[in-house]
Structures are given as C-alpha cells and as structure tokens.
Image 1: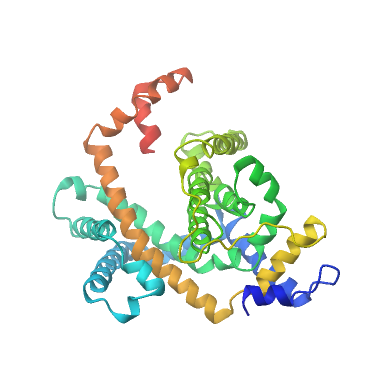
Image 2 (image 1 turned 30 degrees about the vertical axis):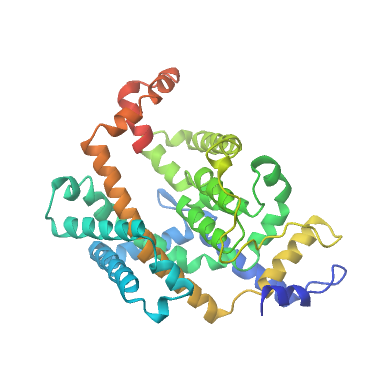
Length: 383
C-alpha cells in the first residue's frame, strides 16, 4: 500500500484511528527510539542500543575487520570501474546507477582510498601513508568502528524513519523549528539522534531524508553541520579523558546549549544560507507542512504518523531497502572516508598546514585563558 493510498483510506478526523495503524506506528517507532535515541549505561560507559550491538559485533570479528575493510574498498573500485567501462544493464538506472555510475572525482577518491588501505594493510610504500598515526589510524582504529556501526545503522534505521515517528515529532515541533532554525520539524529527530545517540546516525538520517525528498539541499547541510556534532557518548569519553567526570552534566549542558545557539546563527549566514533550496532531483519535494484537518495538534500529529505507518513498506521491501543501505554505505561512503581521512592525517602529521590555519584561533583561546594557546590551537581544527 502506498503512502497516498493509505492517506486516502484514513478515517476522517472525527473518527477513531484504526488500531492496526496505531500499533504499526507505535511498536516499530518504540523500537527505533530504544535503538537510536535512548542512552544506556553499561559498566563505566554510556552507549545507545545500536552502539552496543555494534560493539558486540566488533568484539566478535576482532582482528578480521581490517581485512574486511580491505575487501570492501577493493570491491568498491572493481564494481565502479566495471560499471563505468562495461555499462551493464543492471546499472543503467535506479540505486546501482546512483552508487556506481559516478563522476571522475568520485572514482579517483575510491581508487585512492583503496590504494591507501592496500599499502597500509600490507605495509609497503611511503611511511606518510602506512604510519601507525596516519593510515594505521584509519585502518586499525577507525575501520572496525565504521564497519560495525554503519552495518547496524543501515539495517535498523527504518524503524526510526519509515513508520511515522518522523511525521509525529515533525508535526509536533514544526513551528518552533521553523522559527528558531528555519528547518522542518522532522529535523528534531536528527538533532535528538545526534545529541543523545550518535552524530553518525544523525548524518545517515539526514542523508536518507534528503534523498527521499523531505529536506532540500540547504536544510540537509544545516542539519548535518550543526546538529551532528557531539553525542552524549563522545562527550562522556572527553570528560573521562580530562578527568572531569564529576562535572559531566554541566559540561554536556554547556555543549548542547552552545551548539544550539551556534545553529541559530550559522544557519542564517553564508555559506549555509546561500545553499540551494532545491530538493533531490530524482524525487523532488515530498514534504507538505500544511494543516489539512481542523483537529488539535497532538491528534493531527498522530494522524500524520499513522498514515505514514499504514503505507510503510512490508518486511520484504524493508529488507531490500536495508540491504541497499548497507551496500551504499560500504561501497560508496567508506572509500571516501578512508581517502579523505588519510590525506587529512598526513597533512596534520607531516605538514604545518593546520598550524597555519589555526592562527586565528590563538587570540580566541588566549581570551578564554587557555594555557599554551598557540600549542593548543591546531587541536581545535584537527580534533
């Protein structure tokens, strides 16, 4: 059943919402909230449910993860070059065309990422690439986290975004988010996922919502750069590292308030304010924020949510979409992370570039009375 069909079959605002539609909204959405938005304390650490699953998989696969990353990046290059050169029929339209029939710059970055991983894994080539603090960080430290985290995020995100939770929260907070941030109300989910769960999850939600036509280019850029900054788990790691655990509540409150205040300002100034308001071309705008029923806000939000839930994909379609998400992230996003991340680490470790770029931060840090401001300034960019 399509979303439009479900909407036309929905009872009027004066009648009851069908129990089946309500349960189809509540149960998967509750699962999504527990997986992505609720932090749990396990021992001395705080993590979200999906993060705990990723940690478990990482412990299970252990030392095999760098080799898996090597295979993934090599496969990305092989499939991309095959599609570009052979033009197979299965990649002439749809998802696979978007994934693999890409421009020369993206092809080059995928090849570069694979080269860096091969050199680091087999330990040959320039030390600037294979050193433990450049390519080694990307392959041995970052790859295990990204592979397991992205795997579960891609599989489980439909519980959060496909069954009406985005519509419910988006409708409830539409006006304040438009006034404060000039964003759709559904972006509140991205903000919550980022601040309470994981910034990576927030970015994935934003990318998915943009590709489905719910955010335009400017909105997606504002959300990804302002809300997906510091999760509660990462903030706890920072307080542990600097030994201020007893001040965690004050620290995290300051981080959140500062981030939200920055979002109010940054979203209204260049370059973000000059980003295009165009929607993703293959789908166009799919979001309507016009109120169509004369009912209370909560009931109208519930109606919107249950309509979306009624038209949600079935189990087979959800499994297909989840698999496509995993393929998309593994074969298109990870190579870019490795290519750009390794280059950034090389620049940070072997050139004075970040020292030069950090010069404007020195007077700011001195104003804040940060000790050794000149030495600390590069960390504000690299960290």
